[in-house]
Image (tube, rainbow, N blue to C red; front, side):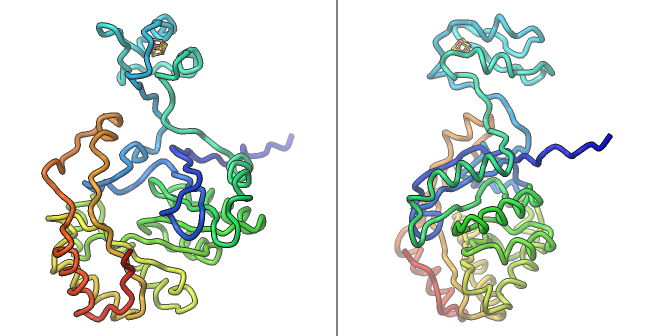
Amino acid sequence: MKTSNPPLKALVFDLKRFAVHDGKGLRTTVFFKGCPLRCKWCQNPEGLEVKRRPIFLKKQCIGCQSCLHLADQGQVIWNDDHPVINTQSTGGFEAIVDACPARAIRYDSTAYTIEELLERILRDQVFFREEGGVTFSGGEPFLQGEYLIDLLKACKKAGINTAIESSFYADSNLVHQAVPLLDHIFCDLKIFDLQKHEQATGVKNTQILENIAWMLSDPAIAKRVIVRTPLIPGLSAQKENIAAIADWLASINPNVHWEMLNYNPLAPAKYEMAGRTWTLDKVKPLTKIELEELYQTARDHGITNLVIE
Ligand code: SF4
């Protein structure tokens, strides 16, 4: 008897409709779950783990104890007036999530087949008009690379404008397959020094630099690329780092579009919900003067196309 493989599924932790900061026009942004990097300033800590996990939202809990009654393997422990998810338990959460009347216990992500996700994207097609479309973000979209390529092909077939936000810490084979299917490419280049990059993000930047260099070396691809550097005081927002990135970018393609993004401390509350510790308490966004100094450093090192909002 012939057996067929089950359809590919990907975990999505958020689907943002009518997004205006993730590329041109009105866009639907798909946040894929799972990231190989561990940047200290990550704005989406709920998207780091590859696995689907149950989460508890205390504000929504009505204390009905339905979850406790279904916790036959200790999945939930009662503490005072609310449940606590027992991360040591190996029991399943399906029944508990289904039974919670307030959606206070729920999964942090949803698994979609390509057809299901395409159908969700197509619902918004009427709003995309000329410039809008779908943006794949994360997490790291390339972590579910085979799925991403098939989804991009399906989007192109449906006439949807496509964009990606990625670290490009990805297999170059996958990148070479994805790039022809992308209208806009936002790639992060955070820190140029290999060791400092590894200290701040948990991975070396060799693969990232190789992928970015490949894209910027081809003028037909380069015009669709915006390189982005998040400016984190004490980490990436240092003159030596900006000068090193600028020298490297200008040596490949001085017309590169390069955007520096000021630090945005929105994440601490998300860290608490994701059970992680926020370590950048004292870090503040750069002032206008500090920003202008870094822009000038980039210009002094040969960059002519800074993207400044
Ligand atoms: S089932 Fe939901 S609402 Fe009821 S106690 Fe558990 S988490 Fe709270």
